[in-house]
Image (cartoon, rainbow, N blue to C red):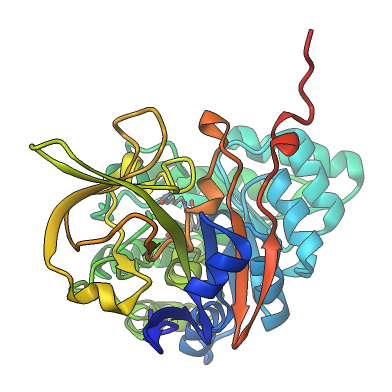
Length: 417
Ligand code: LLP
């Protein structure tokens, strides 16, 4: 996270001090580095430069229009999973010809809207979906470009909630049924088979499960070609892990490409990628202020103004996010073991548990690191808390890319009887 570093005694995002930012926009606040975002995207674009490819940023990781627009302008495509994400992707300026539609439960309205928009490809996850898409496309007098998402049954070795490539998961068409499904797809007038798709899970910290999965899909593509089903696109999904703890060393873009490219190059396909976390995760922090300290005798708590509604990952996945003081001088304070907790009325509302932190005082600013992915995207209004402001920093300037919600925003659409 070198775009977040101490300069002139304060933690900065690029050249903007998080202290001055907090004074301007308040806390809690999500702060993103434009340079980090672009670096994440270009890492993939460069690593796959010698094959035809599109890096389709997975919108679910962070769907803010400021983030999306930045990536769209840089040349990225988009991986969407809902009509809402289609709307955002188009609004942000992604060319429809670079949008792919994944997801296990696309509704007929969503399929129709995506067909109307003329997107690049549908990643179909069941025969039911395939038949619905065929019917809608024929009604509209078009052909839907389709990849089947196959479930390669490999263990991605990640948190069970975000593992998707095992045959016990709801995702994809079971590998054993793939040939039959392709035969049906090839017979339908409303769809055109163009590709094969996998996505085995998220926060992958080893490349070997990916290597296994891509080997399986390559074997499938070869068999399909023998049967005259021409697959010219392989979508390898997303999932590359990021560093959350200082001592972690997840695979780099290059490591990732080194595992996948030999197989994909031999197939002679266009490669689609769906990375989310590895583009935006370490490009963002959640900035929060310490409200109170509490020492119960058994435990010390640092109560901050951000909560599980802003960042649910610790509560939901027991995820670890580094926490850094904004004031560099605080790093010299004696360490103490604390829980960093929010104002929400649940004991599950914590950002860090039993964490050794340099002692912080009431009023201090803290940065919860690696919060760019699945932070604001999974935020809620629980406890009627307005969602945080989001800021995109570019050099020494910043733009508010989402204003803080107001109480009026929260009740808009509701009725008092
Ligand atoms: N493609 C598909 C089909 C996916 O389901 C996902 C993520 C991605 C791409 C992007 O994966 P990434 O590159 O971001 O790992 N909320 C969880 C992560 C859920 C991931 C869901 N699918 C978390 O905070 O860890």
